[in-house]
Image (cartoon, rainbow, N blue to C red; front, side):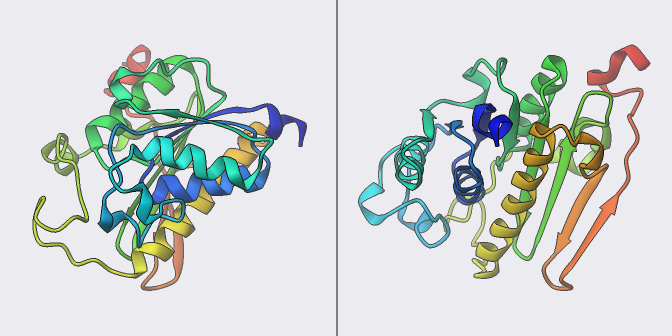
Length: 232
């Protein structure tokens, strides 16, 4: 447990997935966690975020998560970073877990993690589905597998709040999906800090809640990826 207690972890994003990831990290024994998010809690967040309460509406998400998570384990230091990811110093962490909606913000996190050789676990959810990718030194990164759809959606931030992008279909399944994806992210983080990188998911781990399946798509480093320019 010593490695877990001493690991310095950044959770980027304090929405539904970030709530679950921070909760799991604290309960798993991590004691130095930073959580970053510039957004504020809204009423629609309450049914999906385990660490938010009605009294938190209007407050910064990262500050609420840090405060609530700290109550789970008084020995755990949870630091709030109420800023955009692009404004943060991303160096000095032993592990980064991405729980972001914006593709551009995820790619910013990805490129800095690769440059700093910081292990990065990226999680994403969409209704019944979700995915996790582990980015380690010498492995493919997020940008290695980008396609035209990702480029087209690069600067779009997705929302479950009615009226923001398009009338959404809010599925109760989203609650269980975030729990599954966050659990996988923290499981991979535990492997990494315990020196078991070779056991981490190699590729993209896709979860399909309709089928109850987990599948892995293998990846290779793209020599044209700007984060692996030395291979071009």
